[in-house]
Image 1 (cartoon, rainbow, N blue to C red):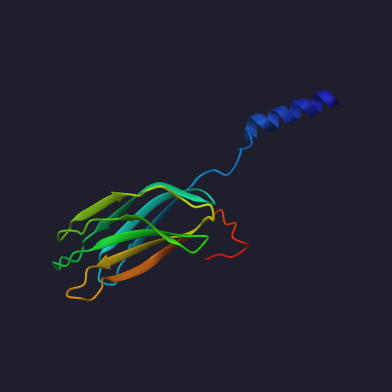
Image 2: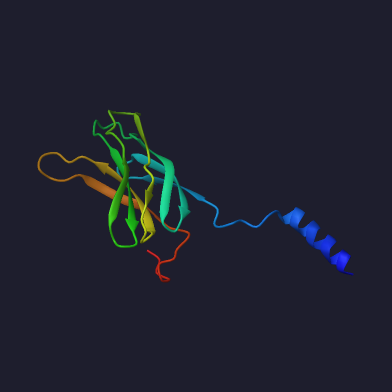
Length: 148
């Protein structure tokens, strides 16, 4: 009887594989379009509650209106700080793309959220016109049940 139980347990371990020592990394991808027509894409990896690493940020100028466009990715920490992860160069015209690699960021208070903004530089003294239609919440949570 004991032998049959050990054989069954061994068979289950072979089928199911070893238990993971922790969380597996989760890769996230987000695509956004601005109201004026340009697009951006971000891909990165949540490693755990406290870190984001790797990935790329790409912006595409699709409006062909001679207005440059750029994209910005930031991380919001558990302590409320905003950390820049990447900013693309401004595109140079119709059909042009710009790409950047994201920097790794970690924070002991955790990374709550990653945002992607698509921007057009403003003319004159006004600031840039940006939209932030993409917000990814950390799948590992750990912020007292609060989700941002």
